[in-house]
Length: 93
Image (cartoon, helix red, strand yellow):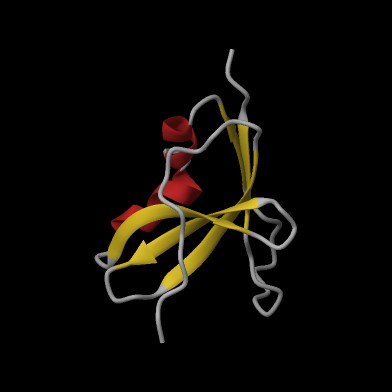
């Protein structure tokens, strides 16, 4: 059995949504990316790909990369399983 992957939605402190962050747990990365609050990012016309960044805390971050060079932290991930996604690299300025 593989290790589950848990995700907790990233909501910047400057944004008051009036609700708590969404969460999801899945057996596979494909299942996790199908969670509605994650999958909605792929509907954006500028969505390019998913990637994973290493946070200062050591917790991986699920990133949504856009074709216009913008990027967003979508979720904090918790897993011991390897994630089959490209590593996020900061864009060159």
